[in-house]
Length: 164
Image 1 (cartoon, helix red, strand yellow):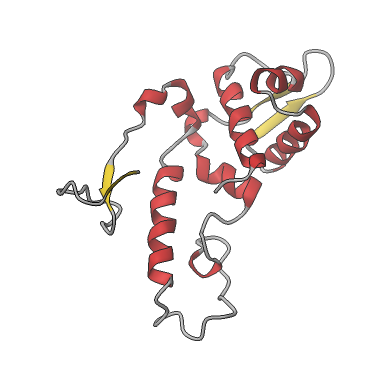
Image 2 (cartoon, helix red, strand yellow; image 1 turned 180 degrees about the horizontal axis):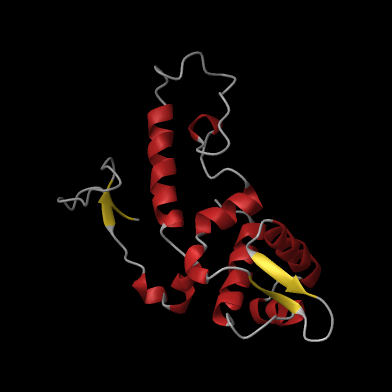
């Protein structure tokens, strides 16, 4: 589950994507449009700026704007900045790996392969969803995946179906 902070960050980036190329956007505009508390939004935007996703301009006509093309920013990048690791357990994290303290052997761990699949499924969506998706939400495909299927397999049977 993503945090409320991450959800607000994504909503703010949606607005900045819609306004891309039009100059800096005021925090108060983003706050009002997406119903995000202004003080909380200020901290979020500052964090995104400090990680190179946004840039800010001070003074009259100032505000925040995307530093890079929205097609080059994916949700995995945003979530890592705001929430840290995406992996469900630290032992399967791509960027924040830590051995689990309660695990004797990662090779024989029954939980680790499952958590790797959960991580890969989430990353597949997050890494392939850029900010441009907000301009065309219908471009997202909803695929049905059978429980137990590999993430790149579409299920043939209708039993145990789950919408991804």
